[in-house]
Image (cartoon, helix red, strand yellow):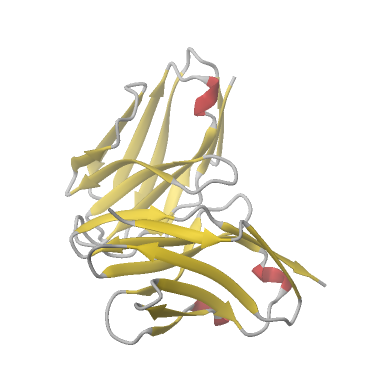
Length: 114
Length: 113
């Protein structure tokens, strides 16, 4: 099973709301990632977790707060977002990090900030 | 530093024709190379990868790619396009010293009946 699941599929939130995105994988992978993707652009790395510890934060604004409760779950907490944060948010996992293994992506959460 | 250049942001082919999507990379260390496909409103799906060994790599859905070190290229090909191949294709590079993927800008493939 090479599936990464993400919920919700779509999310509309106001700039004062607090919401969370969830990602789950059951492949036994020890690395998990959050990416942001704008239309017609490649994914941009936001965060990397390795063995449930934050390894990389690509200078992401603090209104995005990642959390890795266990090796299978990854959350992204959202607060006071801006309209320019509207995008497709992709979660991915890989066998390990920083050693390079292929990353498996989830279907994404389409976020709209109003 | 590593980088990826995909030549052509949009490629259009007829159904049954050869698909050729171009990818050139820059890397100071031996690269790991990947092709991903993204269908509308979906995540990225790994098509194929090159790490070491055989330079001609076969992937899913009839796609293959050849690693050419002398040309710093990793072009994606498929002998006969299907309508279902219409999607966005991303080439990506990494290496055995760090797991970050560096993506190209993507190539949108259209398939005409």
